Image 1 (tube, rainbow, N blue to C red):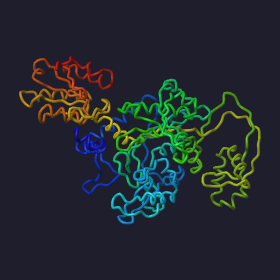
Image 2: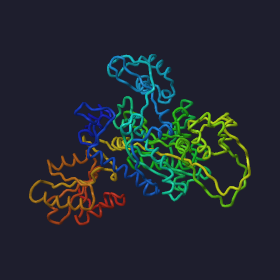
Image 3: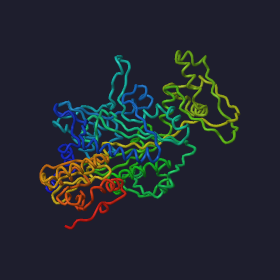
Image 4: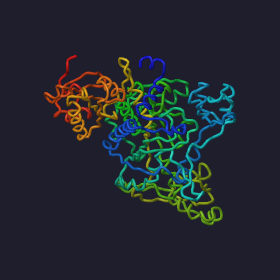
Length: 587
């Protein structure tokens, strides 16, 4: 194991261990496998479920975030409104010899050592020139590439038997929340702020995924949309996190070519304007806490601010939480986007459904407001059968926004419709306002469940005395306890099976193993990350006690069987340490 660790990187070792022990492997291997698709075995599926359970404990159980589950396939209209159809594209090149296709920006990062920042802002022409300048050839056959093209990285399908009923596999789970906002707002008793989370599969038709769990075509995403009043953005959780330290790589430093990390408290980040809204800062602190709980030290985490051309089309400000991994360097595990009212406004415009909420003033407020009157004589001839729809949309639009846009730009965009000044009459009048209607703003923490699985495995892997150990945190380990008879005779297996069944009935994930020597069984358990081993020996038959072994220190204590379930419940809830499980053994 020591020689192996010296000659091969952790990514290779982890992936081989995962395949050999049944954590995960490339899907469809009997047909040669398909890049970007992964099958989880029992251990991997349970590890992933346990990580998602930690997310639910943090956000759903403790913060009261609502959880929903929506379809993977959505009508094309959803992603036209969200902007994904126009923006979810990547530069692609095709090898003229073997016809393999690759993401052009990834080739430039890997073979020309161009930074991700620089690669992402290049035009197609600049990408082509960079590939020629650095003489980059096909990694598979050495062939030359054709000119770059943009490739839509969403899976396209038809819904039902009609070819015109276009749908897409969702590339994120967020839109399933936004389109259901009206109903969710009612479920939240029509009070802001509130949040909604969705954990589920998404599809991204990656051009050339070659990074295992780090980049897949089908994966699990955890999207949390938190809705709040933009005029009351204060976060009531801030007091609990104001002194939490965040490691930030700011956009202004990146623009200067600097990789300088600044360490600031949440309060300092807000006071200095590094992070625009309190809720975003608090969710970033929670994300840091989550990854520490998965075994990643704080110093191996950072939040990198996206530059203007790197940000998603919906984001006013965006940070990626990155973790350092051996093969790939800094890898994103979560994104933190300040989406403002972009999504709800777009769905309101495209669907015609009012996404605004009403908030009553303590006292009526008199103010002057714009009034927009559609002129059907002008709208009708231009928009014909869609004119009535546009009138309805205008009645739901913010009159002040229409007025300002027309005065500033000479038009107002109502979804895909351009409203010119001659189509409307705008007047101003004084009104008494009982309250105000507005579209809530949104901050979004979004986690990659599969990437967190890989990160947890890499940070858990270590070698001790030539033996591989996965030192997974006890609350995410796929199997919690191993039960072993010291030898397979003299009634020890029967007694061990009794202990095994007792722990199963108490709700623990338990493995029973009597194959081979006890040392080999301990080694197998260490390699898959079982925190505790319970061994039934001859002394057990005398006094009903067992040996409990710690995976990481290899220390042992002696515990009474009847006390074991209660002790283990405390241990796995982090209310007891290993030393609390029994009397230490000598040697």
